[in-house]
Length: 255
Image 1 (cartoon, rainbow, N blue to C red):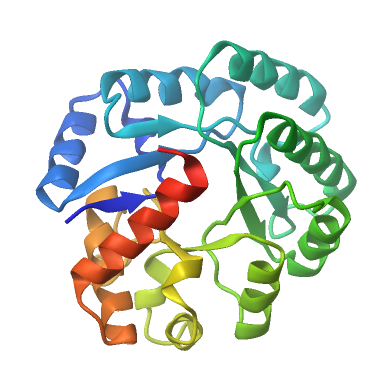
Image 2 (image 1 turned 135 degrees about the vertical axis):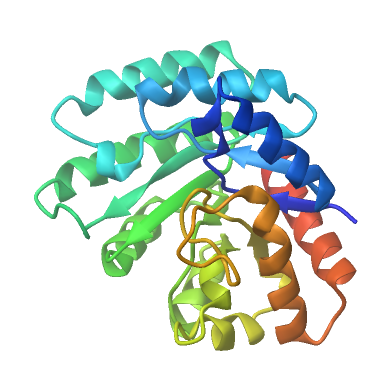
């Protein structure tokens, strides 16, 4: 069995013994592939260093997180673009729209999103999209941008059935993480109605740990709990979920 974590910030641990410990726990739980989304120019060395340390398991992405889109975003994007040109990467991300913390930067976030999705289309790379309190704004952008060339994942999907179907119609996969295991989140019913063909798995570690570790620091080895929950919801085996979602991830990210 092979599980694939399509969105983990495991690289925050780069340069510490805990990175090796967590990677070993990943292997113990059959988590063999991990996609690493960059967040800003400062995190680039950690992303690339982790991928270089585990080249057969960790795959770097490059992007500017919407919460890090500030007045200096053009210089941040310039650094990230140079990094993309000099390295083998597997996606543009983590990019998106976040109106939870700061609504005043919406126009900057929108422009940064347009620029980065432009890179993705030019390079034939998928995107990893962050969306928080901004589904309407994000869908408006995606409908503007989507010309048949944009692929990727709406990461940490926590929306309703209609939003899930709209995402799929836009040609994107849904990244399902620990929230699907939360009793009152409502995501379980949405996921139960989705075809596995539209789903990839993720942890978003160290955030949003699944039950039974909810409230603690998340790690990629916990992907096993997310996969088992989805297997239970669909009435299929864990092996089926692992095989289907890993195949989806391979197809999207080219790993």
